[in-house]
Length: 88
Image 1 (cartoon, helix red, strand yellow):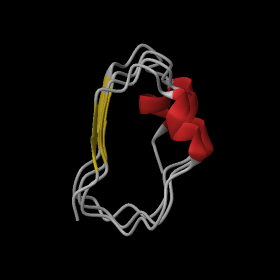
Image 2 (tube, rainbow, N blue to C red):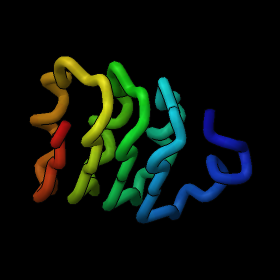
Image 3 (cartoon, rainbow, N blue to C red):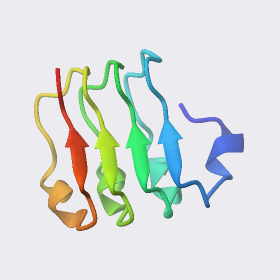
Image 4 (cartoon, rainbow, N blue to C red):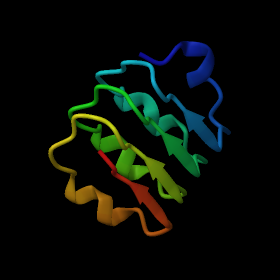
């Protein structure tokens, strides 16, 4: 769940939702078209929304310490991605 007040911030460049026991990231994350850095470190994610892989400005993703078992092929769409942290 991402509150509406945050979803309205479409010019957001960084989103840090670390250590919140989040189980799911909503597809609405796609509204953050300017997002460069995303961190969901230390949550309970088992998968990522496909819409995350449409955010072409992403340079850094930290999804370490989660319950992910695989990643979408859509990851290849993120041509500006420089850092992908998957540590467990």
